[in-house]
Structures are given as C-alpha cells and as structure tokens.
Length: 97
Image (cartoon, rainbow, N blue to C red; front, side):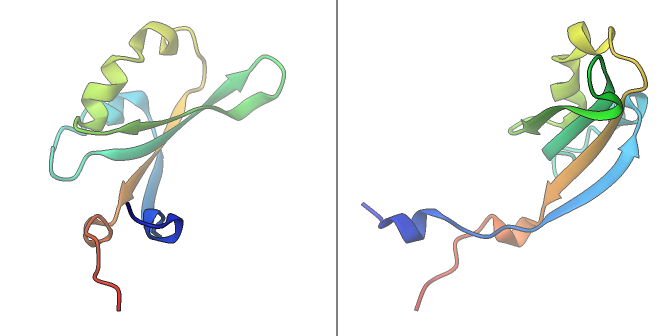
C-alpha cells in the first residue's frame, strides 16, 4: 500500500469562462471537454454571481454532465459556468526518485 505522501499529487487546472449553459451544451469533445466545473447564479441569501455548485465531469463530457443538472438549473437565474480542464500530462504518475 502506498504511503500517504504518494497518494497526493499536484495537478494544474486551466479555467475557462464564464460561459453560458448554452455554450456548455456545445462542449462535446471527449478528449478535451471534461474536468471540473463551477456553476454561478443568483442565490436567495448571497445574491447574484454566487457559487451554487462545484462538480466534475468524469468519463463524460461537460455537455453530457450538464444534461443531468437540467432539472434544477431551469429554476436558476443569471447562470454562468466556469470550466476547468486538468492538464493532460498531470494525469500520469511520474516516477519518484
């Protein structure tokens, strides 16, 4: 079993946005359109441009993941999204040594 130190790694995330939900629906390239995302909108207590949700599109595109959010997103106003792509070479484990 690896020690606790080897279970952690630094990855770089390239953030894009803000983009609209309509723009997210176009993000269908399985080789590039996956990673982390943040959904912003108007919150009842915290007001406009509040962080509403943080998620990950893993083994699916951003477009496919956002289809699963359609039920609640239709009730939100002024929604914008930031998309975070993990740098590809950070996925691979580098030898220590």
